[in-house]
Image 1: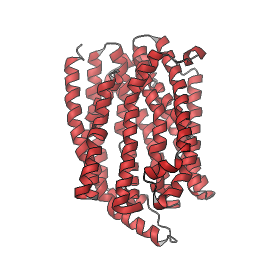
Image 2: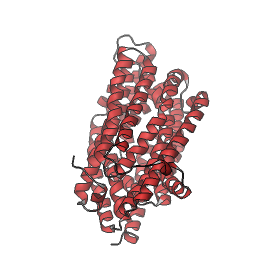
Image 3: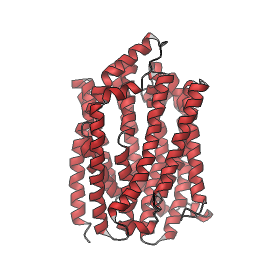
Image 4: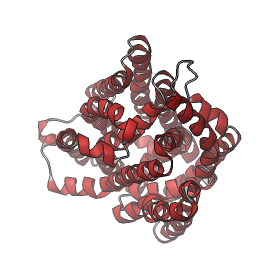
Length: 459
């Protein structure tokens, strides 16, 4: 992959530049998503389907703490991209230093709170019945490693803001490969069960942090911070917070959705129904990796050119990103519609010594997952517009519309739908809430993006 420096973000052809940015981001997300997917397959086959449900309970809690780092990273990276575009390197350095300090302070505080209230958090997120004990084992170990995850997420966005997507890709690949190797060693060889799965994940976070630290200490990074840069500045914190709050709010809503869905589905079908959603949740993380990769590649291009007042290039980057992402989303959609049963079966154990409870759970999951998956991904071809549209406002530093459009799908539409429809339609009401929310959010985002382009992005 050809090297991209920050000034090239404002000069190279948009299509070529987007490929250079999006392909490494997509590969990184693919490997990270494959890690989550294969990790779940290993856990399902070597521990059991209840173990998948246990991880599904813990993920929104640990990911929310980790997402604090991503929020700080994306908020600060928007500032850094625009500062580099405007040739204001001192502001970029001060912003990066503040990101590091803020990430450490916030995530360590959250970990302390998370461990203090562990027995309350796990049941609240659906860790009930047979799910509670394995979820608690996994949670305690993984949460201790989440500050490393937060620093990785923060650092990764800054690496992309510098125009170094290849290094960002490697940072995502290292923990994924490490985690899968540790999964095999700790779960299959050492037979550590849920504790093995948790230690594999945590060691993956540490490996990622080590690589990110290497990047910023090496000659590859343009951002060489010194001690004064770590001193928190109110104006920079305010800007990081206003932009990063978009990402944090999105992850907070995701965590709320996990809480609601795990509890709603547990009431509808017990542990087995939670396991169905756990498999679909993994596919939501994995299947859309190319679309998320295009979105990540789009962010620094739009931010840099907006900061450099090259509005024609911003418009072109929006159109090109939507076209690429829509094509990839359609290909994903076709695959999921054709092979849902085969996908579901990958997560289920076929061991000969399973208990009657495990056999019944597996049969239920295999029966219910294919139709649920088809409903959940029914509107996939149109989501590119919603994702790129919301990302544009975040990239150019417009925090309020970015926040509102980011929350449109999951907060304003999806949560009310899953609170209402299951009362009338049962399980089906849960699954059809996904495509309805996708369509409504895409219509709203398309309207505001079109208005923004016509009123603001005038060359």
